Length: 251
Ligand SMILES: [Zn+2]
Image 1 (cartoon, rainbow, N blue to C red):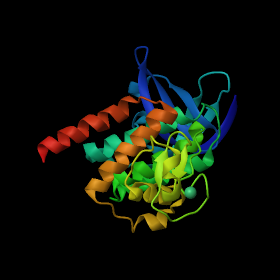
Image 2: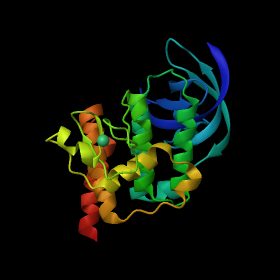
Image 3: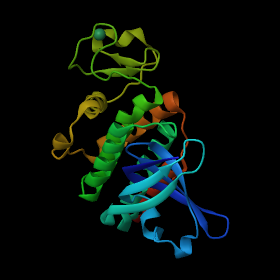
């Protein structure tokens, strides 16, 4: 077992035996790990093991089994996210995407950083649906899915009203629409936005604004992409889908 200090984000916790907990934390330096917390009712760790908590953890990392938390400092909680069920459900979904996308124990500091930054922007009140779309598009690579939303697969021209072809796993320009009789017939703006989402910086994000109808089109196409290339069925995603239909009724 080795002692390590690292920032980490709590993914979830669950009960274990009578008074113990298992806590899964995505750490910046040692990847995702499962931690064992004994006697939670008497533990100083109670508040820091809540989902979506970020802290500096002092840990004993065990490569072969459960790891342990010795101490922590600099706790960061996402108050605004936690108080809003819509925001919280999107945040929980991107956290579960991370849990699904990479193996445990695999160090992935860039992904850790991206996740925390995305949560910070949700916390600041930026559009959580668009932040989620950007996260979904950028994390595709971690699932081994590399899609080019920038240029036609045949002639490599850019900046045209593209359509998407599942047959060629890429874009078709108007001149090459005919190559796939089952092309998606998408609104070209969906693909324009996905191209931007792949490379967008957090500063540019503050200027992005997307109308509700376009958001629905993005949601539908990204769902199709995930269905066809990733095949994930996360409970947290189902919750968002159900929530949005409830949201429509409430409006
Ligand atoms: Zn072309």
